[in-house]
Image (tube, rainbow, N blue to C red; front, side, top):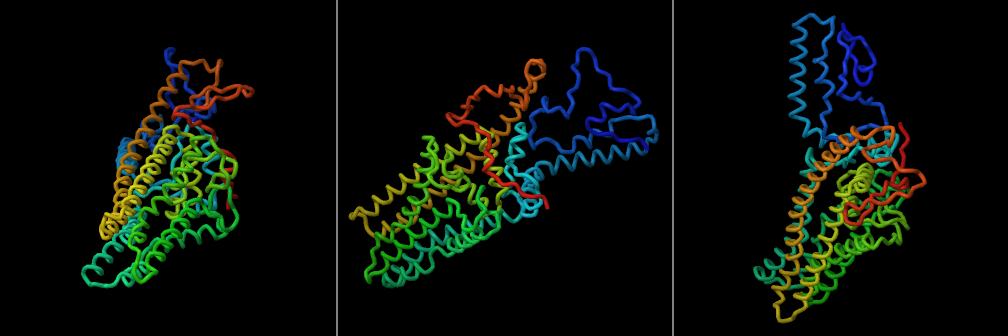
Length: 450
């Protein structure tokens, strides 16, 4: 049986009957093991390319045509299977491998260090909602939280007040007791995950107990403010209906306000006054949406530290991704504050009837959030598709430039010329002011291989 040779050994061995000949017009092939001429690649490439190319190799010791037909059928089957499952498996691969606690315990290095050593790779986010039970779980949580936080207060108030002639303090005693049930449960679960000694859910660079992220503190502020408004408004015998109409705008203040402040810190280049999730005190602050998405997916959705590492690596490597995060931060913070102020003004204007004010205060913030979420989903999908195509086109252009450039004059790694060690590196300004700094060593922790 002939020996099957893969990879760079096929260029050095002469066991094949027909040696590989190169014309004078074609350049010499680049060794795949060369660290200088390594092409930029992405995870969208076909992983079975070597398997499908093996049947094309002809040797002297393979005269059986039936075996050749069998190999071709097997190759055709692999091609069909790869074509059908490649798009699905490439999205689920990182979800099923890198974002699991088992893989996290057995690995020997962080995703940040890996992508820092391989700058030609587009860092992948080791998490996806497209497969398995996670999409159903996410949709269920969103439905329960919106129904409990928005629909239940409006439905109970109008039905009990105008349909059952129930007094106000009794109505809001029921609303206060029911409101926020799923939110409180989810907050308790994420707090327990961050309190435990297990490091999988904690922010990068923190290993001690009670390592809350910035999202947890924002939720503490939001729950405290909303609970206070409900208690103060429903405490007297004659309830303060205008005070009880303020929880919706208060939620916008508590969420959009911190996002705006963190985005302002990032735009001004100010340092973090205290630890903000994976950003240590004294480091440069990222836009607010960066921390919100990182914390929610890592803790609530179970992505853990692998997602935090991949998220930070993607942010440091891709200018398009950084610009999208920055734009999303302003897109959610500034309009959120404007809607909150508008609802507050309507609630405080006495000519507007109290019954109308109550519906506006509870419904408008959630309707606005739903519209903004739909726009965000379409926006993010479009930008990430553009980012992927841009990365691949950039890889093609850099590959053509490297072929025309003499390797003896300048060495390239990932399509970028090496700079002298003593020469200061100028920051990249592709995203309108954000510099493409490499990931810091303090952003991740190395896990000993089991």
